[in-house]
Image 1 (tube, helix red, strand yellow):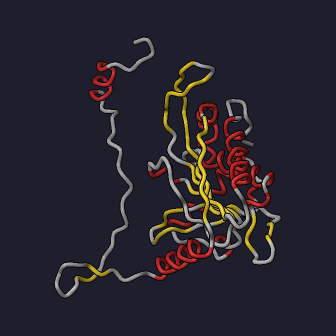
Image 2 (cartoon, helix red, strand yellow):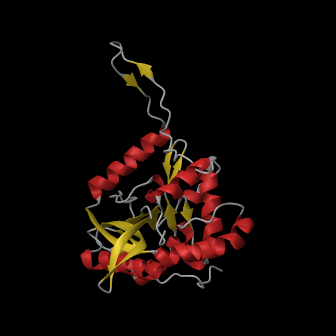
Image 3 (cartoon, helix red, strand yellow):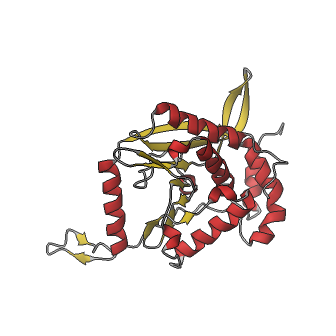
Length: 269
């Protein structure tokens, strides 16, 4: 009615049997031994979990984190993805997510802000000539960050195929040593877990990590009018030894501009 969803619409949809209850992500199944008093369960730390713990502790203890977030209107991106899914997904053999579009915006922005694609060298800042993007993946044994080497040289479709391959091999424990080495910046799609804002820990010794959050339709003010737009938060943690707020904000603004410029007609090849 007038473009709005009514009570009758909802009831008809439920009656059609198409409604599905969202299933929350499954937590890792932890097995351990009961304590002597039976009040606790002690879980032995796996080698992978120990490595994650040591890396995260080193990152937080050695890197002074700063954090920033911006809102992005991705209405055009949503329409672009919808317009190319029918053609592309049969070739990919899987759902075309928003991730490769974001990767494209991130790697192009890293070329504009090379100090974000860097590491701290004590008496020098080490700028990385190649953009090797780490992609955080929730694998069965814990978080793992396989790397898309030379990600700036791939198209959106190429990034989609490469990212899917890395994620699939990460979840099936088929990554090679090369797949997890040489990352220069990390991207984490926490929005896939329902997150709207997050403060990620930098993947040592990189200069930054960015998260993409859940896309939500929200009322926003445009030219003194209220419009319903698809909005997404992007959050950045960066090494304050290497970059200040100006560089962090500049990088996020660049990513935002590139994402908001995507619309039906944008080439993905």
